[in-house]
Length: 312
Length: 108
Image (cartoon, rainbow over all chains, first blue to last red; front, side, top):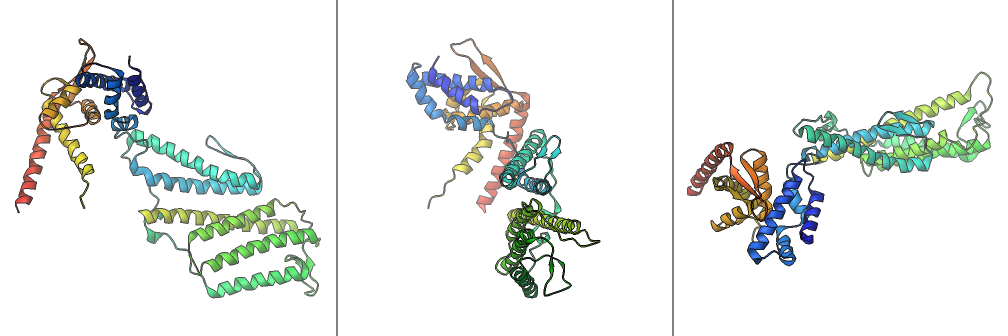
């Protein structure tokens, strides 16, 4: 029993993830080291064994040579791993945003559970969701590799070539001016009347606000911040037409929308006979949320698509 | 500047070593003896390269092995199989063909 040899073999065994025959491999290495030690030093000693072990190689390298051709995930699936993760993450994120905005749990047995979250939980949940999706796709590709690594996995057409991936549209100076005009109008209204939402404009000099002063201030500020994001995002296209800009812009707007849906300020709507202002407002915000969420997911997929088409 | 051909050498040796092993194993031999034998005929190979190749060849059925436990230490002996002889014949034919092609190019 030579302790240094046993330790060496034990370390190799930690890396030797072969289906069967690990014991036999170790026995053969042991036999070889002892044989060589005896041949070179005439007797088997711990010192002699140490010298032979030093020449035999590092345990990781030894194990790696036996594991050639036994990849965990086939190298040909490397791009599939990131592409599928990107697509899965985009869907996961869309569902997360929906549950986050509408405050409910989502359970899709057995792989999906999205709890009700506040803003900070949401911020921490998103990167975790990405790691989860990466792991899930990794497991699937691992199983595929073990079953048949030559199988042809689908590659969505959208990601086939750069030409098929739509660029972020070229900015239009007139539309930019229009956006600035709208923003200026709201800003003026906010400064002048303390709100940008009105229930009635019959008397332009003294319009009826849609909410009380607190809610007016809160919601006006949020919607102006959203519009400000749109203006800045559109203006940024004159400098760069990166999909990342759209992605970040839509993400910020979604965060702002969260403050609308989960407002700490009570929306005390003005009373107008025959008109249910709260329902109209809810539909209005819902439409904005759906549109922005859709744009966000689209820009996320576009970012992923560009990353992959660039490398192909 | 001297070019490093270590990777190329490794790649070339991988195939060549398999042919050598199939040729050498007409006689029953264990790993350490095979290393010595290859060294004597002028081919040096690292032990941690030879053993995984022996294992792969055995898995493919072109060589077979048996443990001899009669001596001081158990030793794993290897011997070529009929399938191995057939593979060696084909491999040598490929090797000769490659040599001929190379000769033709170099002569031009």
